[in-house]
Length: 512
Ligand code: ADQ
Image 1 (tube, protein in one colour):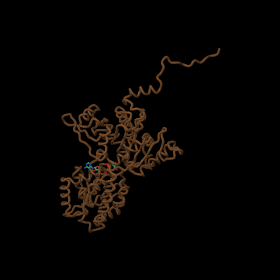
Image 2: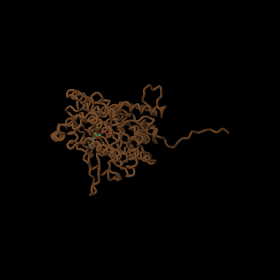
Image 3: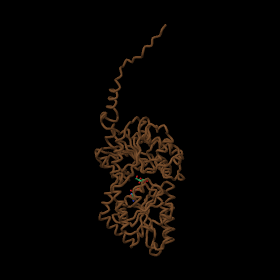
Image 4: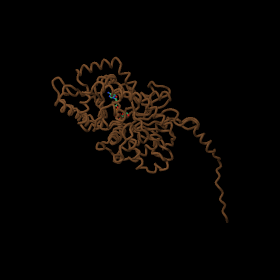
């Protein structure tokens, strides 16, 4: 008997795929579909960063105290968020607080209708293992080339993945079809992949604020393949310098050669048929904000007080967050050598060094602080006299007015990191010091790419070069100081943070 195959017929006729698609889109949690002609990524801006631009602290009465952050990134992004509308997602800095509590606290903050803050609640254990652990005891040291300070514990990686997934859930709940998603920095490298795994085809862009390491360093940590792959899920990946982008492309090429088809003809990778764009976007500061505020009456009065205190000595300034990457001991060694080599500097220069408290629960940071304080003590004991203390050390946070007044009063700023994505202190000094200050700058700061010609470039590991630059700044003729500072100011004025945001977003929207 011949068997006839009867094709299976369902009793229900499914809607044609296009209509079904439209139905699904109308009823999707992403809201009404704006239509195929609406430009992808042309809608709201949705930001994700480890920290929100506001910190919440519990008050004794059970309510929340909120303190806004005021960095250049916030001042550049907030106007764009307000204009385009959008959401900023991140942690509030309050470990262990419940999601509902944080949502309530953020809702009560004054803001606009068009943009809102969305909290990602982290448990105390997650703060310890994702933030203090994988982010700051693995990625931070490794990406800066301090692999000997990496302390990977087995649960760090898992926690990092889990928190990235939590950010993805939080974002997915608030997205619309044409939102542009912008992820910031090393805490959230896996977020793009997590979002794609949730089926999102949004335009997603990413910016890394710190250096990207060569593959031979990256390979030393668990999850290094996943980290590189994670970045391949973004449409645009931005770096501070040419070197960082090259390190990334080289790592991606070696780990995922199939993502670099020879026929594509461009250096950037392709994943799942999606072209990824990589680019260099050196971050900057709000030049007008810094240079304008530096003329305020409070700042000018403080500047005068600082100058009086210096009593005609050459004032050298150091402003660094507490971090072993910032080269503070190397700066002190350079000063020590300068005082040894050029006796005329003794009693004639003073270094005011601010160290801003940071990550002080991480052991390597406590060690870094102890080392700095020992060196300051030794230097002051070696050279100090009854009426001259060579290093005035402060471990505290300054107000903006104090910071600006110091920038104005300083005859030279010593910015000597051993490795730094960019370093905004160098740019802030240039913007605020309307006079003729000299910038002494490490070649290993990303900033050296822009200010290398106007600054005195040093290798902080070679005390000789730091010492020579201190002396050169001390004796430099006023005309040369002025010419160098003018050149630096022109560069930062024309390349401020607003231009940075604009260029980054334009690149992010143009792709695909
Ligand atoms: P950081 O490592 O934090 O940033 P940096 O660029 O120097 O380094 O920025 C420090 C910021 O802290 C400056 O804007 C400075 O004004 C501010 N600051 C200093 N003293 C302060 C105080 N007392 N209170 C509050 N703020 C103070 C990371 C990377 C860098 C990169 C930036 C931006 O490590 O390489 O330049 O991100 O991408």
